[in-house]
Length: 394
Image (cartoon, rainbow, N blue to C red; front, side, top):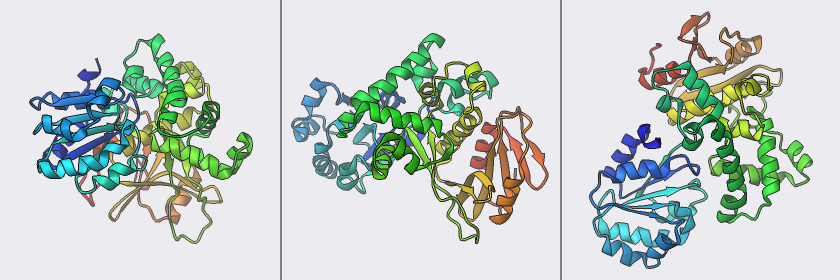
């Protein structure tokens, strides 16, 4: 079923392979990297796929020079490459001798910072792409409200989204357990699963709010730096998103701590033991859940925009500020179908001299508000930001 859903990254991946010796697809485990790769490999004659979590496949690259010599001029895909970081120096010389593009496709479940050897060894030879779990636009091209609610509640991991209703929550519970007990140790981190689970759950309770490292460290009984390192691991394995505060020279006191979001709302809901729509509707996280869902889709679909948030010490706040070139946009998120804006938003917009503003809400279609503000559904905003030429307003 997963292969029936077209991934928006597919065309970009095909293009990068044509113009680069190597391409890396990075993203969380179980987000669909292998399925996407196999769909691309199907169009390459005699392409080779190795899953490095399989002992038999891992043994095939004991002599990686010989392996690539035998598979000369073939596209080779190495899945879960973080299991064999020692191969990267050899891959550099292999790619240089080959002199051809589209020689290597690697898949990894950790950021390029954690795959440091790939960044150092393959610099100038590799393009990096990030694959997320399913986005709303991929599973809901017709902008159906029921499908929007489904991916919002279950999240976008393919096995969670596509599962029978009774199985979705169970899959996410198993995913969380596997990540804590297997994936973290495999990346070389000696962290007790119970400690990381507690931190992850605390991040879920603080979803969409500013991070208070001191409060978390006190609750966990560990140092401030330990909390930072744990959260950094969650971020570098694509499980939380850290949204920085807006960097400004406005002569006002501003909150400088970043905000933290669980990137997949299905995992957020599982960590908070939210299983149904009734559970979510009655939970204090409801509005923040919508905010995180929308932000994740926006930043994944519009990766060339710089993102931050603004909060002044007096309460003036903007949920998301997007910047690209000379353009600056203020974005608020409201879960109401008839959203209203507080004075704090207008004060913040005035302080930052932002003139273009949007309110993203689960509404059927866009409509204007005074002061150059547009209320719009998520899909309309994303499509507008993609298509709109600089200096015009849709």
